[in-house]
Image (cartoon, rainbow, N blue to C red):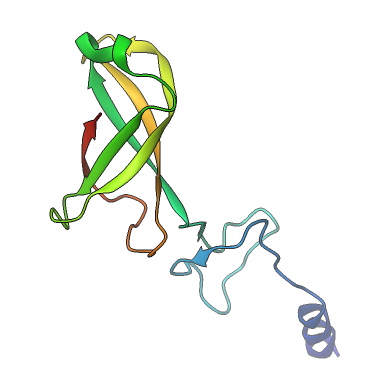
Length: 123
């Protein structure tokens, strides 16, 4: 009876993602104990990716939101992607004397992955 109740409860459960995307390798296996707060998957919207990079202090004033840039993946130095600056930190890092900048890069061919390294050129 307990098994039947568990099977019925399982059939009534569904996992719904808040966005469309690609699920990564699952960090759990059948039989693992999970709660409603357990992370059971990573979900990435890879239509575009967010790239973070640091700009030397002497160039900080020249960086503007909306500025165009070119991002070349270290893994594929023959291919460059266009991007746009989407966020600029409000402070210079005191230790490195650099400014954190974030840019959004379109990924229509789904060839880029989160965590990749890029060489960035500002225009």
